[in-house]
Amino acid sequence: MAQLSRLSLTNFRNFRQADIELSAGVSVFHGANAQGKTALLEAAYTLVVGRAFRAEREREVVNFHAAQSGEAAYITGVAVDGQQSLTVVVGYQPSGPTPPGDDATGRAPAAPTVTKQIRVNRQPSTAAGLVGRICAALFVVDDLELVLGPPSGRRRYLDVLISQGRRPYLDALQRYQAALRNRNGLLRRQQDGWVDPDEMDYWDRQLVHTGSQIVLTRANALTRLAEFAGEHHRALAEPDQSLDLAYRPNVPPCQTEGDTETEFRRLLGQRAGRERGTGATATGPHRDDFGILVDGRDAGSFASRGEARTIALALRLAEADYLAEVRAEDPIILLDDVFSEMDERRRERVLQKTVAYRQTLVTTTDVQQVRAVLGDEATYFRVVDNGVVREN
Image 1 (cartoon, one colour):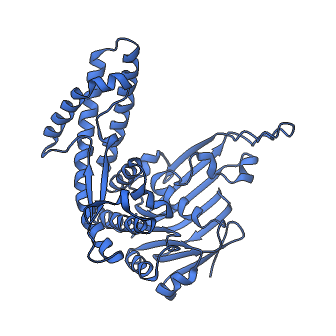
Image 2 (cartoon, rainbow, N blue to C red):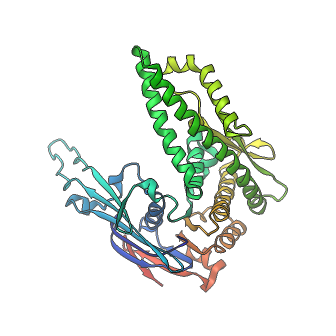
Image 3 (cartoon, rainbow, N blue to C red):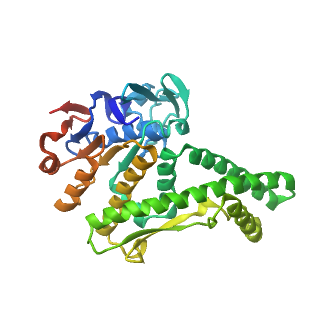
């Protein structure tokens, strides 16, 4: 679905209740810090991937006062594409009211556990079942970790991106993760004694088959992403600088899936001794990374924060291009306060690129920076009073 037409929040973050009608084009949410602008985009992205991107634990998203009385939190989104519509509801139900703290010891109250439920057109769903229903590309301030951070962040970037465009990839990824968990469990048991070799062989075969599908798909996706990212980087940075993405797989992809599986099995055998010592699988795409190279140099080692931010923007713009190409429809663009550290040229480039998509949601503390580029072509909402949204 290419456009959100309505976003409703109940007891989500600092919103007690908000109902926002959205149209195609650009919607700008502006206001001071800590009023709830980012929570709006977090809610929208939760409808895409089934998880709030700022929350380490699900209970964090439930409004504090609602959690105290055991009230549930809800995100409801209606997406449309022509005559088709899709209603997604993500609910968070606390196990009960928050108990009082202990005044004598100064101990904080224990937070209740939260049960999450997802429904798509009133039918139960999982978070994985949401992926690909509504397509979006998210730009956040922390994106510079894509460049300067650990490989796990870049793997997640690839996994979320490719899964939105190619459902078979998500299916393979889930089967791979299950095989990895079971195989690691056997390796730990093997340290203490005997395990059934047939059981190990079964999970080896699952790991090799699904892992080979993953590395081949990642290799193809990165080739296309590199083309898009290089183009955007030339426009955002110095025009004579080159940006490239270099896949660094733990299992090198071969010409065919069968050849890749053969190589995967060879490496499993080669690293078996190490695995027996550590009790963990040492081979597979869970150890992949990709290099980000500017003029042939690894940006993770030399890029300044400003340069890393420009590279990250190029990656996110490439993500949007990739999704539009693979799905043959525009993703929703979500821009969370990414303009504060940009100069005017970069700000204008990013806005002009993203407004070409069917729908873009922007948050900013400085609405004049956005108005200077978009003028009256955008719809503006002011977020005030800790969770109140007014169109202006």
